[in-house]
Length: 433
Image (tube, rainbow, N blue to C red; front, side, top):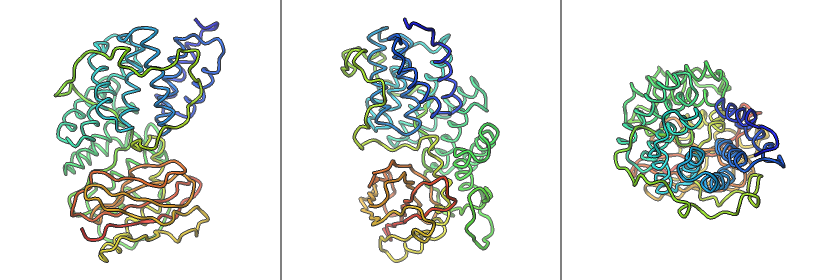
């Protein structure tokens, strides 16, 4: 055991994660891991919490290593079916989902859901199991089965709302994901209703200026009925009314997932219910030899999921400008860069040499330029651009998957700078397809 009782400090980290104070949770968890006399059990819990916080902050490489460490050592200390092990597996499943390791993520999600630990467990574990249901639904979406995903995520939303209420942040997040799925399926009334609920709840819990509230507002604007055309002027996003975003008159494309995974009701096709044995988990050093600080990031093959905090990308006003101007280039039939705002006019870093390679169902874009956090957005068939991801400094390429052959797309890339109202973006389009 630890020389001091740190239960209250671990609980504080949990609370900060629940309140989406991920940076605060990260700092507190790291401080715990710096304690010399921390027990093995508490060290495993602190690693799992740090992995959760880092994942939400977008540091997937460090989260991956910490989640593996927590899962392996929880199983070693407590056994494969212990609540601490199941909780760690839920985090590891979500991180592997983020890395597009879908088969392994699905196996781990089922291991969590088939553990039989859902009732009468600590609230944090109960919540993790419910979120594994939602994440499993989103995994089906990522695998292309939107019908199954919609059914599963709807069930997950009903359960989570019943357990934690409509104003719970995870309930709000699931509602937004469910709305996005309805949008993807062309059910605008259902999407509008859920985006409206999510937006109202997000405003009440987080305030109107929070990045997540802005992200839901962006999506809500995309499903609002078309408004009469009016002169357009560039204004800060905070001054743009919800209905001002341009709305496509064509069948809407799938809005981007605004969070890392989240999952629904009992899956249709279950994998074996057996939990992973220790032999199935990755071999890691014994606890004393494991690093306590966040490891170096893993390879950049990870699926770049928009972390909750990183949806601040929606605040980049240049994307609004891009949605109004980028389609001038489509009619030329050429893929070319077109700055949405005068490049460098704001003093912000500028993306350069933006190129697009059309691969039918995928669009590969590459660029050179600033070592800065960048926003990647896509516009389909003249619709308003939707944010797909924020990518870390040093990233020079991105693949947009699941695009529809024969439909024209534009990809927008620009630096993220929350100190500026307008930043310069670059746009490249497929032309006629």
